[in-house]
Image 1 (spheres, rainbow, N blue to C red):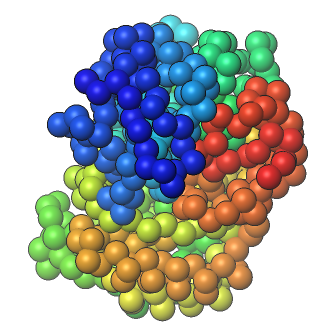
Image 2: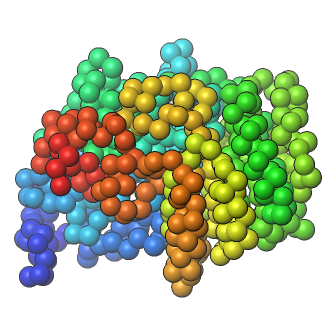
Image 3: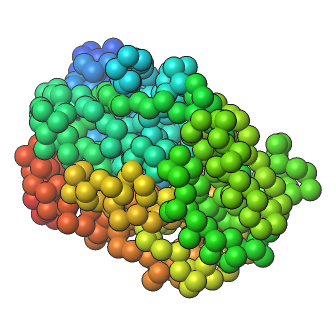
Length: 476
């Protein structure tokens, strides 16, 4: 193993870094640019990201994380932290940085009596669902099993269970955190409560979370829910969206549905006659007793003239995995997003226009509800500030071919520019690309000054800055 990295003379990064010393202190492998698996180690979910870190430490345990944080601090290195690697902007890696890859830390521990699950920082939601659904339980998460627990949680956590049980951060009971000085602390409502507040939506600004403890909830019948898509002709988009915007907030909180414009994938279980067709679709999930499923979901199954009604009984972890095969790691992604408190007629006109212009089979627009239980939490109770109800809207240009990267990006940007005037302030930090400090500030609203103050207390030198960054005390 090469023990030092000497960068070229134009670099402002430290030279002759003694990585051999770090390797001697850690149990996980330290991967350098001359390692055979370097390209694999630096790859993230979004293949549009092509960064070259100075080293990747695959952390075996908390001690490796502590050693990595101290090494980066002592040698003046940029430090990136990678969990699942799904971050939209690819902030789990950075050029010339030391990357702490938590992926080897994947254990889960369920306490059925207490209704909790303890989760290591490298887990994906597939790991968590596998552990909890066996006991008929789940904790609110997102929409893909392959998403990392750490990134989704620290940004807020919007998913199928949001209306009934709140955001992921609303179900976070505590976290173990390695701070910028290399110390390990427990953050919860009693210990380091200010740090605990900041972790619930403030992103990776405050430390490396090596484990999370979540509250779990009984869902469906022993973890089986009633869920699936209802698809409509794209020409019906206006009618469907006008109906949906009125109906969704009035539905029982056990029933959640996110709406999209999309292209029907050319795979089973979608009927072949719909493959490649552009549609307006809603994916519904009912988590109440299955004997009531047909009655409760009747209004959403029977509206209009659907092309497909695909609701059926499915284990919750099966629903969470539904899109993983359609969106594997290694596709090209470009994201733009906003919150919206209403779906206006003007917004619907934009969705109609750009739904017809979908540039690839993977490209899509989703609107995820942030209402019900999530909206009953005060905006200042956690760092996640968008508690006024409505939806988190995300536009993603996606394609497997790098040659199409500019096409899908241009579509997403144009779509967003026309839709943005209809949106509320700020956006969901988990959907941000590298869009600048003002967009980060706007995403936290009135909570931003408190976040900057807590950042100053726990990371005054901004060691953790490879993220949607909140500088200490708001300084630039």
